[in-house]
Image 1 (cartoon, rainbow, N blue to C red):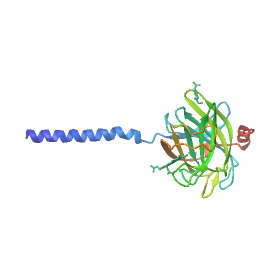
Image 2 (image 1 turned 135 degrees about the vertical axis):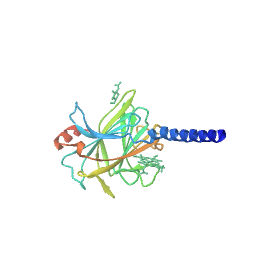
Image 3 (image 1 turned 90 degrees about the vertical axis):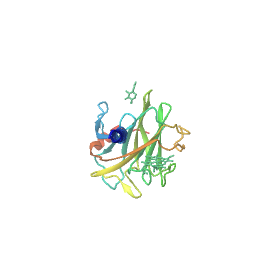
Image 4 (image 1 turned 180 degrees about the vertical axis):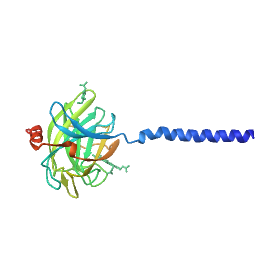
Length: 219
Ligand code: HEM
Ligand SMILES: *[C@@H]1O[C@H](CO)[C@@H](O)[C@H](O)[C@H]1NC(C)=O
């Protein structure tokens, strides 16, 4: 009896340990992303904001209210990245392959924005069909930020953004600095973390005049 009891206790203990290990592992796998509307008090601009938590960049997207599904319209992307990342990527169709990728990295006090496309899960190639103008960029000891407006990210071969429905977006980050920070064609290492989210553009849809004024004169 005593032996049986001990064995039973041991089994319970093992089950408990197994259970508690599972319990400790799950928070890391838990989705901790949040989405919503972010309005910048200084500029008055509002964005669809996505955040995965303090260890990932914040992504903000805005479009003019004249934008219509299946047409070419400009899309504004703001990224606030922890200083630890060497590059940050954003996929306009929710995945790595076959959609416009905006890849950005710090370059001194400014930032480089690189237009990419990938047909496989290897270093994405340059994608001249989408062009960018940098609206702003900054860097301090904890973060670097870049805001860029894309012409050519609203539709592509095989996909498009919906201005009325839900869109899928993807992101990727790497802790490794790119090979040539000043060069938009630089090579870079694979990501250390990736994620995806689905949202309507509605929280980031702003009056066209305000959108143009905000991005106007950017180069
Ligand atoms: C050197 C550059 C890159 C390499 C070598 C690379 C490689 C890969 C590989 C091997 C996978 C599959 C991972 C798995 O199955 O576990 C993957 C997935 C993924 N990558 Fe990349 N990647 C690169 C750049 C990028 C960039 C710039 C983005 C921008 C958003 C990105 C976004 C993703 C996403 C969202 C996934 C998961 C979903 C999917 O496969 O579409 N990657 N990548
Ligand atoms: C650094 O930049 C980030 C992003 O713009 C900002 O949130 C943060 O307050 C800045 N920190 C300092 C010390 O200026």
